[in-house]
Image (cartoon, rainbow, N blue to C red; front, side):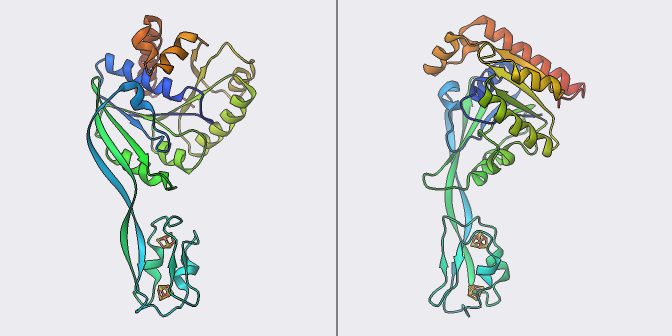
Length: 287
Ligand code: SF4
Ligand code: SF4
């Protein structure tokens, strides 16, 4: 059972929901893994404080041109959708930072002048936190291929009963790579005009992918009622409302998890974990 915690924008409380839910599942004795796929800025580790056991590089294949064999036909430049290989008068130039490692240029080079070498774009670290397995990815500075690192994180997951994934914010290809094969997407939002705008984008994305989803409203007692009205009009289930509690902000700023500090939040997330499991196992799916 794969559950992604996502949001249309950053700073809505995605990590708060992911880490508290991980603790709740863990306390219920369920076999879970927490994956932080926000590879440009992973931060779940600050809260669950894992002991890392291994680190693995994530690489992509990028072209290497043998200019002795190259006939300057220009086919590789035509094939590349990312303008990452350029055939002009001199030697063929490869712009590795633009290359997506698709292998197209090598495939179509009639002179067999292209081979590949591996370029590191990030790492996946694996360890244990509390009673669960924890994994996260880190995109190397200056690299843009976050989806490659996200794939690496997901590929390193075991077959646990529950795989809980903290997704990157927004609706970019990184988010789609993270959520595309999940069984439930929890969209975290806040009741403000910005929150509503970005929730609508996230709902459109999740519907386009035909994924079951539900909404959590964080800091539910600020702002206005527009998010709730939108969810009602769109028949979207709101599965949790988290109050605007300074104690949560304080624990967050100290790198602590609210449900490990306050019993009412332990109960709140335990109840949420129970309801999510019951609804999913009874096939009364969200969305
Ligand atoms: S591997 Fe793909 S993205 Fe990279 S240069 Fe070749 S065609 Fe372009
Ligand atoms: S496709 Fe091959 S032969 Fe043609 S320009 Fe590119 S590297 Fe050279």
